[in-house]
Image (cartoon, rainbow, N blue to C red; front, side):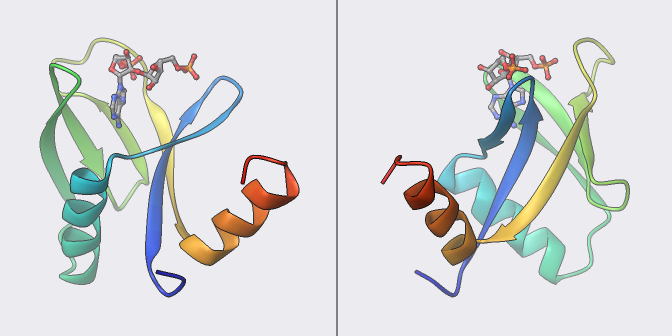
Length: 85
Ligand code: V3L
């Protein structure tokens, strides 16, 4: 859907897409003004802070990562230009 949005978390070499279910949960939280949420991802609870636009494991371990929200058509164009689509 070119009018939809995709959320990402930052990795060492670029941005990772949140999975579709988490993406939908983030869109729901964002559009209702929820400042942060905790979700189970890859076996850990993560606190995703939509005010600070960062995520981190709820137990304080691991990395604090930047997150971003981008229009999906923009992302598809970037991936097309990079030869990924
Ligand atoms: N969705 C799914 N898995 C996640 C997420 C998320 N939003 N956040 C972290 N993990 P941490 P580089 C990531 C995983 O933040 O080298 C990537 O998906 C996380 O996986 O490190 O930084 C890559 O698989 C890690 O396995 O504390 O680009 C991998 O890191 C684990 O949860 C390397 O990415 C701990 O997260």
